[in-house]
Length: 79
Image 1: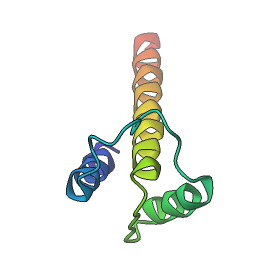
Image 2: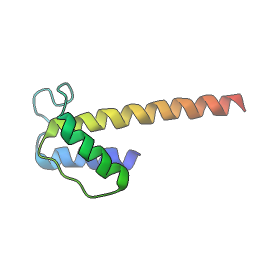
Image 3: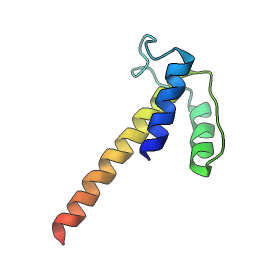
């Protein structure tokens, strides 16, 4: 999971949109993010010209990683 976050960050840097106004505040295009999610999940190559879609995917993936870590910590604490 962290590898995809690094890849998405690198895409934003290459696109030179890391400092775009509202980059992590404005939502990306839902239709584009659905396609990107499917491609990422299937390990297929992907691209996007919309920095907000990439940033939104980063936010979603980050939260999934955080909740997974909390869940694993909870499970390990029960053992």
